[in-house]
Amino acid sequence: MRKVAVVGGGLSHWGIRKANWRELVQEAGKAVLDDTRNLDKKDIDSLFVGAASPDRWAFQCHVAPLVADMLGVYPTRMMARTELACASGQAAVRYAWLAIASGFSDVALCLGVEKMNNPNMLESQTTMAAVLDREWDGIHGASAPPFFAMCAQHHMKHYGTTRRQMSLVAEKNHRFSTTNPFAHFQKPVPAEKVEASPMVAPPLTLFDCSGITDGAAAVILVSEERAKKMTDTPVWIKGSGQCSGGNNSANWKSLDTWYPMQVAAREAFRTAGITVDDLDLAEVHDCFSISEIIEYEDLGLCKKGEGGKFIEDGQSDIGGKVAVNTRGGLLGCGHPLGATGIGQIIEICQQMQAKVPKARQVPDPRIGLTHNLSGAANVHSILVFGRDA
Amino acid sequence: MAEKGKGQETKAGGKAEANTAKGMPGWMADLPLVQLPLALDFCSPQTEDFTRVSRFFDELRKGRLMTTKCKACGALNWPPRVVCPECQSDDLEWVELPRTGKLWAFTEVRLGAPLGMEKDAPFSIGIVELDVVGLRILARIDTPYDKLDFDRPMELVVAKMPGERVIYRFKAKG
Image 1 (cartoon, rainbow over the protein chains, first blue to last red):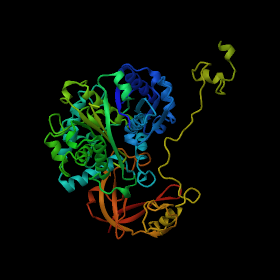
Image 2: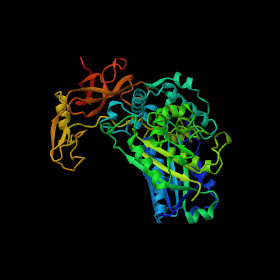
Image 3: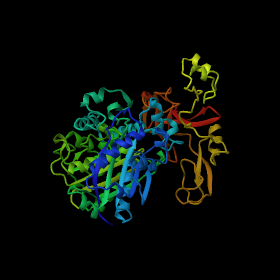
Image 4: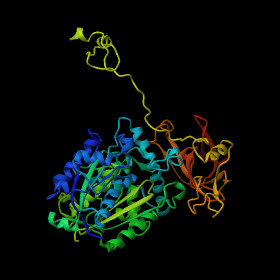
């Protein structure tokens, strides 16, 4: 396996955008090409487009060649859309990583995008419900909020996790997103406001839920040989893990212990040659406040059941055990499904390159990870990054 | 120009006079309103023309909750399958599931219900652990959220949907 580096990243603004799907693509495409120094666009030999449901949200499939049109790239090795619901962006990067590591590709562009807002938001909710096993689970009106509400309910019942502990996750991530001009949510949200916001699915309120957001993000991945000619500050992919527990609800072994995440984390740490204690920062999938609490535990940052205490004690803040979701997370940035995984990677890179605003800069970070779950926490995908090759 | 356009067909097939009547210039075409479906139906067709597990729905109409069981490895499948996911055998038999169980998890959908269900909100949803077999099934719960609790005994409800379709639900027992 060859070493693979991230050498550039770019974002569109995320939010309820007065722009359509293809315009978001062009914004992130320009941003990544402007950001990547010493790149001849003709050298991009592979293109992966992370997009969860452009077929429904933008009535457009076969999107990879459309993106190639708009960005003026002409892949000669590999191109495809990658779809893994909420983890579609990370899926693009995992394929690009393997294509380059294997020697088949040298320079890959990964672009994640989702246009989720629609004058009829019911359509958006409906598309989300199709992420589940639509004919057997989605048909009952199940979608992400009720699933994660039941996870929260079980975590509260089994481990005594409190309403306030979940609010503190939302408060932290919204505090970070106020430092991020690309984020959907730009105002602080104190715990009291989380608790006073409308109930979506008890016990989860509106601010326990990530936003329905339009946005795009893109990164350029290259081989070690190329990276050394292009930049002094590459960020290296060190390892990865991914594990699935099926999709249908009958296969949800537990709602508050995500066993596939434990497997993915072990595999990611093993392939990267690190332990959980080596982590300086982590971008984990806080699609709901409770998700981040369960993820502290199943990543191994704290013991099972102590995720609530972990946030309460400030262990996931800058200066704590591991800085978690410094760009604002999904709660603060919003969650354009295809873009999220790539937005997280850009944060890890910019942290390691000391390019983020001081208010959220982690001191001297060397090892970080990004995590995405997809669907009803059915699949967990993790990538480990390092500042040193 | 207006004289020249008078009486000519527009590209959309309308008369230019019609445009004048609507205050639209002659070069503008007024296309007929086409009502497109906004979404696909959540409930797929249930008859034998469309699915090989149509028996599930036929039995459900009679009040029986069925699924498939693998005759080769004994695995109880959910949802019903045509090939056993455990051993790939296609020698499956239909078995009846218990109509009762206990509520394992539950919540209420207040905001964000999908199309076609938005008028139902708020509604309860939960996972019922069926008696004897222990299979956990997610379904709509036809009992108000504030009347629910963990391990509450539940029983099967069969709900009719438009177009001769049916869906299983549960409600609190008694």
